[in-house]
Every structure is written in C-alpha cells, then in structure tokens.
Length: 151
Length: 151
DNA sequence: CCCTTGGGTTCGGATTCCGAACCCTAGCTG
DNA sequence: CAGCTAGGGTTCGGAATCCGAACCCAAGGG
Image (cartoon, rainbow over all chains, first blue to last red; front, side):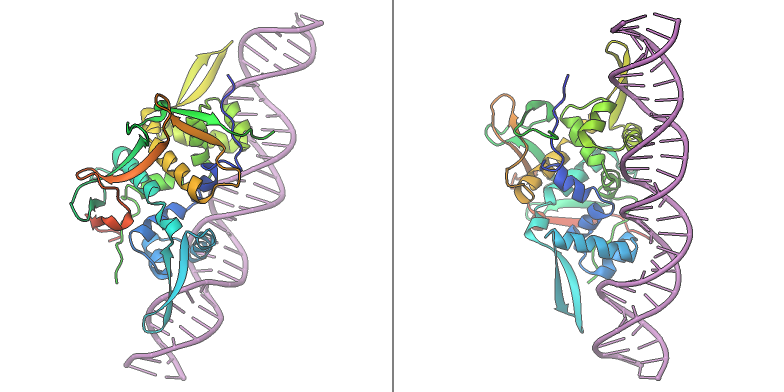
C-alpha cells in the first residue's frame, strides 16, 4: 500500500529535475548541443526574452553546465559553451528526442536528422543491464530505497 | 558562423521539452515510476500544492502520459497510472538519474539503487550507433537540418 | 559624430504558483 | 442518525516569475 517515498532534496533524479524542469532550460541546452554559443543567437533562435535568457544562462554557468568564455571576433565577445558536465547531458537530450520522435512527432517528421558521423548509422538510446546486457524497461528494474525521506 | 536553427514548434526535442520543462512534471513522473498512483500520495510525497498537482496531473492525462482510472478500495477511488507513452519516458528519467548520480550526487550518495530484477546488475543508459554499435558522444553525431525554421 | 552590433540591465504589467480554506461523497462510529 | 474521517478535488488572494519594450554601454565604421 505504501509507495516508495524518497527525499526530494536528496534524490539524484529530483535535483537535476529541478534544474532542467525550469522553463527554457531544456530548450537552451538543445540549442547549445546544436552549436549555438552566443547570447544573440540564443535569443533569436529561441524567441526568449533577453532578461530571462540572461538569468538562465547565468544559472547554467553557476551550475557548471555552460562556461562563459571571451573570444576575439573583431573585438572581444563572449560565448557560452558546454562544459564536460554539460556535454554529459547528451543522453538526456537524446532520450528526449527519441521519445519526441515516437510520440510527439509532427506530421512532417522530425526537423533534423542525427547520424553517426563515421558510419552514418542511426543514433539510439538504450537502457540496459551493465552485467548481462539485456535491454531494460521500467518493469525489469528493482528499486531499493537506501535512505528514508521526510522523516 | 550561422548556427543550426530549428523551428521551435516542430522540433521533436522542443515539444517534449516544453512539456517536461514545466515545474513539477519531471518530479511527478519520477514518483509515478516509483509506483505512486494516488492523488494524495503524490501530494504528500512531493509537497506540491493541491491545485498545481490537479493541473499537472490533468495535463499529463491530456497528453496521454498518465491514465486516470477508477478502482475499488473500500469505495471508488482513482489512480493515475503510466500509459505506454508514459512508460516509454523511462530512458529519459534514467538518463537524468545517471547524470544526477555523476554530477549532483549528495555526499551520502543516491537515495535509492536500481538493479536488473533478474540478474542484479547495474542499470546503464547508453547512446550508441544502431548500425555499428559504437557508443556515441555529442561530437560523434552529425546533425542534418531537414526543414527550415522561423521563415 | 552618428549608427550599428553584441551583450546586457531595468521596469511595469501579465502570468503562474502556492498555501490555506473550503466542498463533496461514502463509509464508519457511537 | 449525527457527526467524523478520507480521498480527491476547487477557489481564492497574495507572492514569485515571466516577459516585452526600452534603455545602457563600448568599440568599430562611414
């Protein structure tokens, strides 16, 4: 009867969820993975208000997901680039995209394609067992609470 | 110089991102995957306000991610259960968790463990090439825009 | 000198969020 | 049968966010 109850503050799903489950953050990351780096480009490609963009970029930099870096164009400009921590979010975005492709695809299909650069194959995302290699769905996984929550 | 620009409205990342990048939605799904089904249980386990919970559950039902179902306890009650579409979000949540484990883990470690039910192995999430099987990072993937955006 | 460009900041109004209080229905309790 | 409780909500007003538009600033360029 009692369901598994886990501390919001400590769960390693809820912490990132709180960060990514903020308006614009996922879209910002999508743009970043597509190669957008400059304030102006984020702004025009996403149609986000400048003030909110400033704020979101700021929190992503604080969180160490983006890095703000000066570079010389014709004069000093700034870029926002994914850090290692940011790049490591790739599976999340890919999983999201795969789900979107399957369940929310507009009639015309996805708006861009992804392929393995060297062999041209499709990109897949899989949840699998590290030991036996079987592909896993939610039902194949046992959840073991380690600590107790909201005491 | 020009970065890849994609229509927000049509991209299969941004559509789900708009849905999941809404406060509480990811946390709600986490709870759902942990087995929470009842309004009351969602409310107490996440400490969300009842009105917002009503609304979020509503949109997830509208989107076909949850299904509202009557069942008999001692009288008629309702449960919110993941549909197939909802269950298919598992890789997203797992990817999120893996990232959280690596980058935002509290000192005490994650608050619950996941293991393959039959063999006990760890759960992994991998982005890989469907053709050659190589594990892929963002840099190994070529993006090809198919349609043009914001015309 | 004035204009443009990138990268912001400020400001007021419009939305959303949230907590607390309230509602309704069935059983159960006395 | 009066009242209490539990589940599952709805309503409401204040607080926090969001957003668009306007403004700021530095450095080239014409």
